[in-house]
Length: 152
Image (tube, rainbow, N blue to C red; front, side):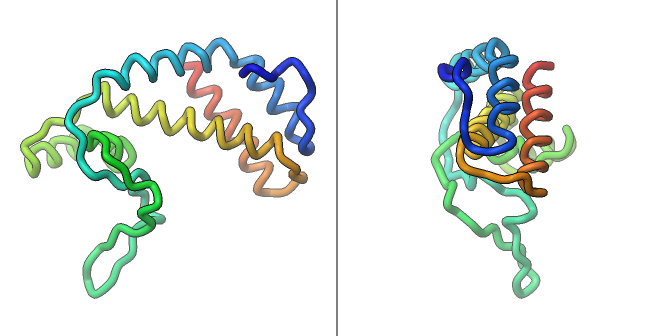
């Protein structure tokens, strides 16, 4: 956000990324401030995975295993729940099983964190040497979609 006035070298998506970040600078600053305010009110931490999506599940011997623990951390359960709970019924089942009702503000906090992390990672990538590849195009679409979602 501090370096959007000078051209970004890197590749074909560097300048469009710089322009997109500059155009969304106000939104990004507001959402970062929102994140900081909300993070101060989190609850009791537990061990969380960080990325419990289907790509990190393995079936072995009839059991599901959660793998790829490089993002493990202590946080409120909502750090993982926001990504795996599809609806209110899933959250109700979690509350029944654990005796802990998920906090909607904490769920939104981690949804916002994921989006802000994505923006930071895409910016880093587009400011680095890259070409016009299918991965770059998909990342560009993801960056612009994430910026749009943060603005709404």
